[in-house]
Image (cartoon, rainbow, N blue to C red):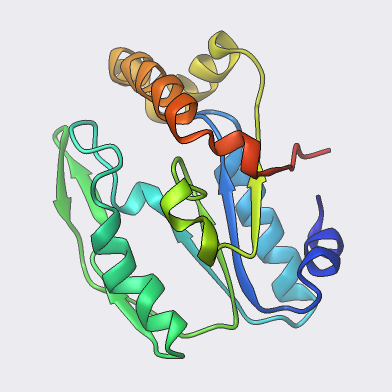
Length: 178
C-alpha cells in the first residue's frame, strides 16, 4: 500500500498508521518510504520506531513508556519528548532526548505496533510478511551484524509466540511493498 492508498483508507491525513510484522520483513524501509512520500506530498507526519524502546530482554513490556512519552502527548495535540535507546557495547542505554513536533498523522513502525491492546487507537494497521524465517533472519543479520545472529534467532522465536497469542496479523491490512 503506497501513500495514496494509506490516505484513501484513512480518508484524511490524520490518525495513526501501525506497521507491524516480524523482524527483517522490511518494516523500517517501508515506513521510511511511506513517510517520505507523504511528506513530499505536503503532509505533516511523524515517524516513531518501536526499536527506540525494545531490548532483547524487554521485547514488548516497554509499551507504557512509549504511550506516556509519545502517543498520549500526540493525542492531545502536544509535541513529544523521549530518549531513544542507543546500543553501546551490546548494552541498551537511553540516548539523547529527541523532540518530535506534533503531527496529525503518525506512522508507528515495529514489532508489536499493532498490538491488540492498542488496536482501538490505530487508524490503519498494516502487516509485512517479508518472506520465510530464514530469509528474514539473513536480512536482519545483514542489517545488525553477524554477532547478533543468536539474539535475532531467539527474537524470531519470541515473535512467533507473540503474534500467535496477540493475533496481530488478523487485524492488519497486507502492506507488502511492491
